[in-house]
Image (cartoon, rainbow, N blue to C red; front, side, top):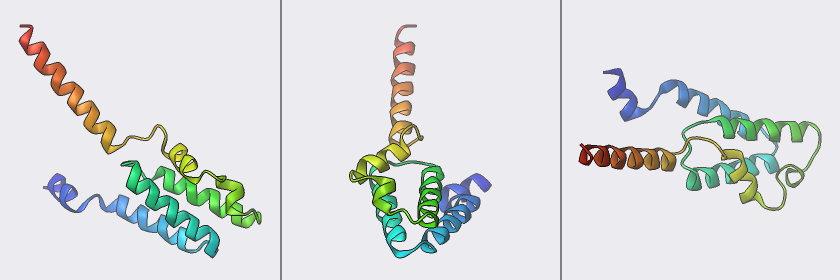
Length: 115
């Protein structure tokens, strides 16, 4: 039953972790919070990641930058999309999951034909 509930509404601990991270991001100075929101939206729209880690790393970086008086652009650079892509590099994504699923399915079918 628990698996069904998680499939429908998601894992509560992950949602709690996400909300905590979002609260940290909202507490950032305006320039940093706006950058976080735009980068987060880009990551959600392009990467299909399953983990919160890149977003937590992003908030950590922006908090540190704000504390040290560095501008956002000094941290993320002028190619923000490349920065965001680098944040999620190596993370498991929905696309990678589907790719693995397809490869496994075809391999199984080919193995059966060889019998």
